[in-house]
Image 1: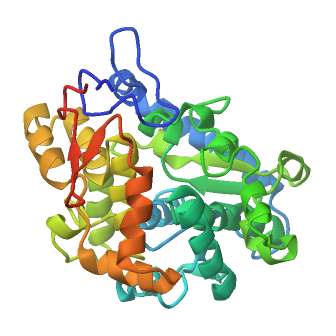
Image 2 (image 1 turned 180 degrees about the vertical axis):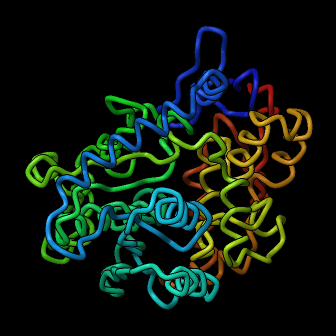
Length: 378
């Protein structure tokens, strides 16, 4: 395990790649951003939008479609697209079942509606959702492996349904996070999003093998490349056009427009600013599990941005990662376990079986301890 020399990105991140100077692709991209002509990028966006406006037919049609959770990124996108670009977006929200969605999450979606947006709510059958979460956790120790299929699939599915060819997305995970498989023809081309870890490589195969019928999985089917081409769908990463796009900045912009943030402690959530994944809380335990698999969690993603923006030193970031990167309140583990029908003991047995033993040791009392030194590696 090695770390980027500038931030705390480890080479254990799936699909990550370091330069010959041992710099992660996200830091390399950020350095190149210092020489970007942002007016030129804005002009590129305007030309792109004009092209799609010409395709719009019929009175009252929407200019574009945006997937939203009501959180920081989607709220900022929706407001910027409408108020800065003058577009009329249709917002699409994939709703979690009642046992999972937070009151905070429903309030944030209500806030977008009250701000004047048209919002379509997509809600997959809750029984299938729960069974898929259990199957996903049993197979991958990652309950979100199935739900992310529905999350990512809902937007292009509804774009096809409503005849809206332009899909506006947030950050480019290839450039801004380092998931290089998602890189497209340009920095704003998002049509290779289908190659991210969750969606690629026969995403439904394991679900079918678990005994689920294809007819029950319609919300989980990402449109094929042929369907994208037939309906002329194009995903455009808005983050590529915004020089101040970041986790914290987006949180501040959205909070100024009514975003309700998380109030639980950092020790329970690893959420340094209370602005991440606000529509549900079980992502907290998934971030903890990600840490035990790959050696980085939610705090690492936070501090890497702050380091790049010169708002935090690497030394201060190391302290935060050491203290909070595996943070997860016992209440989240208990409610999740109850929901999928297992005991807390079964939960930890599954987690222990998935721990990366090259990076961690499991003590006799069940505690999981690092073999590596944060910021140094192995």
